[in-house]
Amino acid sequence: MLKLNDISYDIPDREGILKDVNMEIGTGEMVVVTGPNGGGKTSLIRAIAGVIQPSSGEIWLDDTDLTELGITERANAGVAYSFQNPVRFKGFRVRDLIRIAAKRRMKEQEICNVLSRVGLCARSYIDREVDGSLSGGELKRIEIATVLMRKVKLYLFDEPEAGIDLWSFGHLVEIFSELRKDSGATIVIISHQERIINLADRLAVLADGRLTHFGTRDEILPHLHIRPFSFSCQTDGAE
Amino acid sequence: MDNSPTTPVDLEKVKNILDSLPISATTRDILAGLDCHIPDPERTAYNIRENSRCAGRHSTPEIQIVPKTDGKSGVDVYVAAGTVDQSVYIPACISQSGVDEDVYNDFHIGAGAKVKIIAGCGIHTHSNEKSRHSGIHNFYLEAGARVIYVEKHLGGGVGRHNVQIDPITHCELAEGSYLEMDTVQIGGVDDSRRLTTGTVGPGASLVVKESLLTEFEQRTTTDFNITLAGAGSSVELASRSVAKDDSYQEYTSVITGDNACKGHSACDAILVGRGKVDATPTLRANHPDAQLIHEAAIGKIAGDQIIKLQTLGLTEAEAEQKIIDGFLRTL
Ligand SMILES: Nc1ncnc2c1ncn2[C@@H]1O[C@H](COP(=O)(O)OP(=O)(O)O)[C@@H](O)[C@H]1O
Ligand SMILES: [Mg+2]
Image (cartoon, rainbow over all chains, first blue to last red; front, top):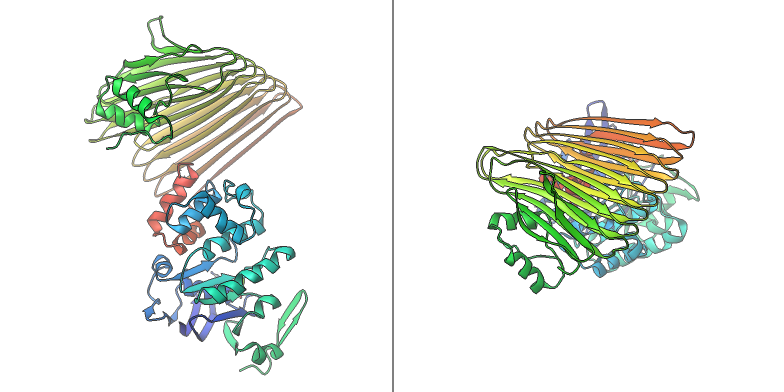
């Protein structure tokens, strides 16, 4: 279970990036976080992963208080985090990054299996460099692969659909559907995609740093307008 | 320490070669560090230097290694035209301090030959006395020859070792030939002045991949001066360097295009601590169809790279080490 108690995040010139966010997400539950750009979604996930330190509040994963732990300690306590913008590494081959994520030597076939899970034709990618020579979509899938391959208690995905073409998107939806079914882990996905939202047990909306809605799809969706290519959040009447 | 070779070759043969050589345990360690495992005597010519003397030399019918006769130390390596699938090992090992040597090795590669040359120098001494090794290498590639040259420089041992390694490399590439130089110098060398010069003939290509790491108060300068003389010639210089602590590195490259040609130089440097790097790439185009590009990028390790590896469970120090190893192609 992931528990966020009164999480706030301020930085010197900008107060209220996150404002008193409270959430409790059960073991095995999938929550999709959505909301307008700049609403604080990435900040929330980075606070859970330990990349930023909230100004106040507590973060618990089962019986472990994560609040004071660093990124590495949280990773080893069972937190996996897929970045919105994947990082490029000059000199790392795809196989190097996968091996680092596995924290052990891996046979070529195992690496291929990890990559084919995210729809990359493995043999042609394994020795590619994780740098500017890969497309945004390819990098994003490798990023997702490094997270999916870890067996953890909590998976965090920040806009996994970004940069993924429509054809592969269906495959991505399947990946999350399977992860939800098979992992038994808590899953938090930031997404604007209806098909990912439809997988969620519950939906959360963050706008202007505040958790404006948190409930089942049936409770929340009537308050949201989701149209193709546009998304807006109806805030009037919220809270 | 386990000195057994790690390459999947006939282990009995390899063991016999290394065992049969009158070399010290330190030299065996250095050879392992230089990846000199001498895989197959029927296809490998070698000349092993230990403390300025020859500890073992072997030629094949196609690759002859002949000691210099002009009073200089070093060898001439003659690779017969058309030789394929053979390699040359010419490591220099120094385990006594006080060595100060210039070694002249010339490589004459016959037309159409395809060979791999593994060279390098390891200095592993136990006192503070200075050791200096300068390998002066000339490569003469005849038409269509293809050479992969791998060179490692290692310093080590106990005490405030005072190690200087100055490699001077010159190459001449005839029509349609190809030379790839992969050079690595990772720590342990206090002072190093590297100079690489070359002339690239018509349709020939030179590729240089250099990886350098300096730490403590080490200083390394690396200088390239390449002339693209022939039509359709090309050069690709890729230097990756990491300057840690109070170390200093200087990179200078001059690519001159005298014909329709392609030249690219890239100097990428990572600074750790108070390390300093100067990079001065120069391009000279003397022909309207010369296409020359240079790139130089110097900076700290990107914060998001460290964060990404931390989210995979690595500590900050482990993440930094991995990023450096990957960057220097030693992962
Ligand atoms: N380090 C920072 N410095 C300044 N502003 C920031 C910083 N981090 C986040 N913000 C601001 O906080 C708000 C929330 O950002 P973010 O969490 O990325 O939102 P979302 O992911 O919902 O688009 C944005 O207005 C963003 O510009
Ligand atoms: Mg975001």
